[in-house]
Image (cartoon, rainbow, N blue to C red; front, side, top):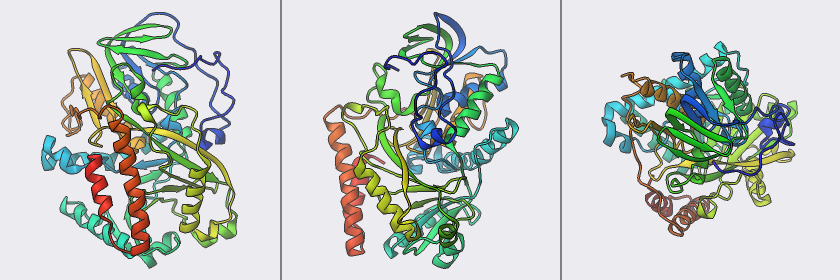
Length: 468
């Protein structure tokens, strides 16, 4: 991936790209850059969750492999250190679309694998002593109107149709929800136990250290200029490898020939100052469930370990030409929108100070479904397109890449996301026009539904246009 000039070796960046990094004192001193040509068995491009999990799993399963990870900035610079901290059991994308590739049984296996991944990450964190504030409290999708509640009932019926029972998803009435967390105007919520809260920067810090303990090498400050069969060209040398894993997610469009493979969509977050005991007593939320609302342009929240509320949502969703915002700047209008959503959900916290805002990019394929691919002939591998569910899906992807590269025939290698090749996004300006139209329609739909109390046809039109 191309980049600006690198920071000198060992010098910590002035500030982290998110509150999560600020909370740990900023990113650690930078690792060394690649210095000349190198031979390896596996070269991993990108030191986010996907690249680190793949390196970790490969070295754990086959310690003889020479595994190197190449990162333009520092490990966890991108979405892995900026996300909402949901270690979620959600399967991103359309189950019907996955079923075309792997049938109904394949989709159910993939969903069960995602559920199990939450516990697998927790197990590795315990084994590797990764302290990332992990609490498996489940997740809540809250309805603040009868219309939203009706949609949640329809979602629950769909889950039952796929064979997922009370142990996976259940509907809470307003009273049951209030026993967990008191949300303004709440009508009820869907609850799933398959989710945990984490502190993203702590997770990526611990994972990077575990990768190095397993014997892989992480090169930071090493911009990748091009990927080719068995070869990665960087600004500091060429790495030749039997396998090359592209783990660049929202930054994929910056690589030659890949501009239309994944769209980098922006997501914004803010975090409050710590809430006092009286405010927490009014809100509850002692179980630390992750939480989202049921708007079409939804928001997502967590209660942090140090007593704050972090809330995120779509700000300025897309930059023309698939440009990624490296600095993570967030417009004041987006901060105001998120502050308003926070006050509506938690009136008791309406006056709390917003201490920090930031933004990051997530990778979205044209069909909104994640994929893992390994080509034995070229040695080219990739995983991504998590559409915002990458904290957990990246672990499943790393284990799946491990089995595919090692030639294993396992339940993971038979999941329906393996080998999928979504079509590319449209060229500009069609790409920009389409994405802007979709998000504008969803905003209008949310406003219309709040005003009229009935479903907006614009929302279903936007879904069809987006290809979800």
